[in-house]
Amino acid sequence: MYHLARSLYMYATSKEEYSVLLLGLDNAGKTTLLSQIKALYQPRPDGAPAPNPGKTVPTVGQNVTTISLPDMNLKIWDVGGQISMRNLWQSYYTSCHAIIFVVDSADVGQDPDITRLPSRRPSSASGPTGNHPSVFTEEMVGINAPGSDFGRLDECRQVLESVLQNSDVAGVPILVLANKQDREDSVEVVRIKEGFVRKVFEGETGVGVRDSRVLPVSALMGSGVQEAVEWVQTRVKWNKEGRPPLMK
Ligand SMILES: Nc1nc2c(ncn2[C@@H]2O[C@H](COP(=O)(O)OP(=O)(O)OP(=O)(O)O)[C@@H](O)[C@H]2O)c(=O)[nH]1
Ligand SMILES: [Mg+2]
Image 1 (spheres, helix red, strand yellow):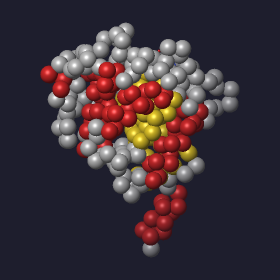
Image 2 (image 1 turned 90 degrees about the vertical axis):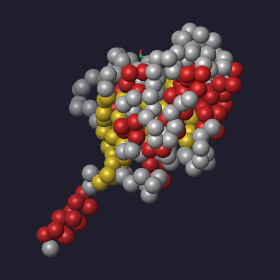
Image 3 (image 1 turned 90 degrees about the horizontal axis):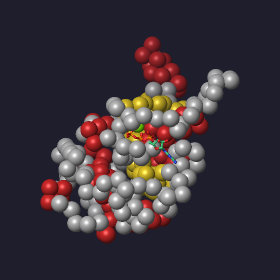
């Protein structure tokens, strides 16, 4: 009887918890986005100053924040995007319910069309597939130096492809954020979507199964951030049977 009562109590008082993984190249704006989400969704004690999301250092390891929404908690993991950090990403894949892939819209070239990229070197042609570890090396990503006509477009493509190809994230909803839309030199979201993201998703095996979206944001200014969180909130619920939440 005690156990039944306890289970009922736990059921009535617990909340669904979903994990969201923030991925993207270094400098894309993941930590800034996490700070902005915190500023929007975490209550501050009266009189406490608003956090300044613009002050970040490159993430070594991870930052994690849980935000409480009316129908769920979202536990958001911000993992470092430097090359040396990327091999850690896959350890988060099996337990995540959604991925937010952040793109620096001011660093993909002014015409981010992956079909215009120079041909790749043979060593970079064999990306990681299936359950094979996603190994990122300096050589693999070294085609487009920052400041080239394509910015870091090819590196971004390789990294997004390697995430999609990992079978541990099969069926996980992916939101791609075209970040830094406040910058004058940023590329419009539609061009990032058509020239780059859509083509990467088209190359995915089992296409059509995955739920995905591309949205414009400025993590720094906070614009689009709420829409991004709302998209994730709906999609993790839709995908609940495939990836059940934890009850906390
Ligand atoms: N103008 C502008 N700058 C931004 C925006 N988002 C991030 N930044 C800047 O971009 C730089 C890198 O931001 P971070 O949030 O640290 O990038 P990150 O993706 O966490 O980088 P790693 O931790 O190295 O993976 C910082 O100087 C931010 O202020 C944005 O929306 N607009
Ligand atoms: Mg960071």
